[in-house]
Image 1 (cartoon, one colour):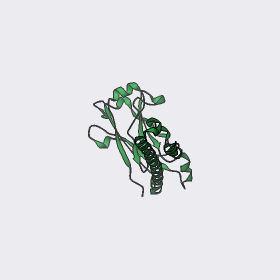
Image 2: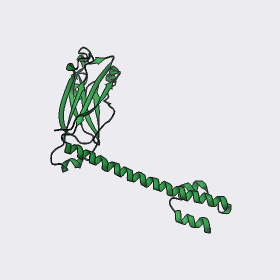
Image 3: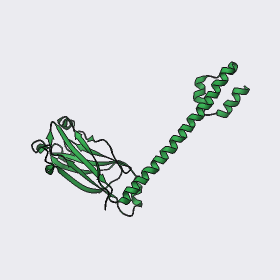
Image 4: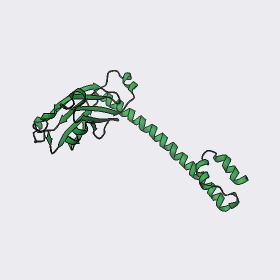
Length: 215
């Protein structure tokens, strides 16, 4: 028993213009169990097949550190499938490619020769200058799925702790500056430069507190 696929649709509009630019285009990110994936497409082909084939790759944008995979009892080959929709409504003519690869963050796996460019329109895959691609990915086992989710939880906990520290710091700065402004209101002779208060008070709160009362 394996986890179900999770996927997203990628619509390439103004395909002829994208071909002229010859740059890769990227889908919106897809989050799966804490990992982030995206489709990388070369509308005019990649490398030696440029001008002849549509090239399609799946990229792992973010996830576990590279060293984490070596702690696993087995290699984590993520399964993925890329599907190009036939726009005549006959799903049996959809082009489907499936494979499993050992991904690291920033790596791409896929197909240089996904489909011939000269056949896209005549075979019914390019309509209104648009191409429809769907990509799906899943971890090989529920063990890997849980491992990925645990990593995500740990990252969120770290982010939460950092945000709480920032909030606490802002509260301290606000209290110190509020006190200093209160002093300057009731004791004008000890007034402080407000701009200096906002920038420097957080660095020497106790020293400045004493100066405000005893200078």
